[in-house]
Image (cartoon, rainbow, N blue to C red; front, side, top):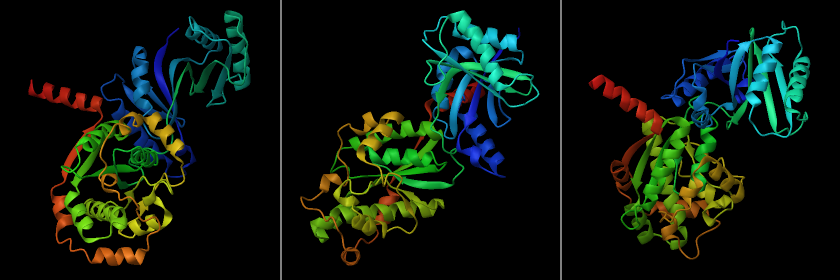
Length: 404
């Protein structure tokens, strides 16, 4: 019996696409190859609306699984044994896979891509299930079974496996243009960035800080967060923009109840300047309606007025518990709860405005002589690039080989 190992990947939202589906499939395959760089595989190819990764080392399944979870657009991936489509072979391979494993119930889930095979999916389920039941004396349970043995028949081959990991679904990164994400070291903005990555958007980040009036802890926290987020898009870039001089000007010339709104308008204007330079059509914000004083609908309107392009707010309707759950799932929560001085919250007055009048905000801002402060802040921005650590390792290895 000739066996080979592979990973079978099912995509998510791409299945809903029409005539342009092949373009999304190609982008997903490219992202998978980049994500798996440094791990052994011979090829990644599309076959009957399924993506197969061949030439893998099955002993490194956990490494493959960890990487594939970060590829947007994947529904799930399964470590498979590839054999000829022979029912007796399917039985023996399925039984061998379960040897030594602890489970109290099981089911078999067979799917035929081609209908020339002489048995139906249900007949395969019954025959393989009966063999497993007689071998391990465990009951079949069609709902919520401990073990789900998956069998897929594709073009004369059978693929059998049970080790499945689930992805985040959505669309592959780089299929939905680009956006600038205004990111802090708090809980919300990393999650809003993640939600847009899940929609296929390629992100460039901007972080505003008030050093040296505040510590550089927020910068360090953001760098850790971006190392996590880079895992979902392999590489990302951030603009670290000093905002202190602009903040001091606002605090000196305006009523304190409008400070936070004017700070945020300044951030949006600078983020828009970066977007204009990079020809990026949209901004991303981590605002959740009503969560804090600056995020009432009136205040959101007053800050959004400063933008020259759309501001997307993927967390607008989520409550804090929803956001925290996502942050924990993607690995940013523990970083976000580290102590830090936020460039806005550090200067929040006791009684901030909660229902800003847009015309009053505009007039107040118009009376501030910012001069060239915005362009100066952008000029002094520190630009950093973050990459997936394993992707960097492969690049370094390649350079070392060239130098040798």
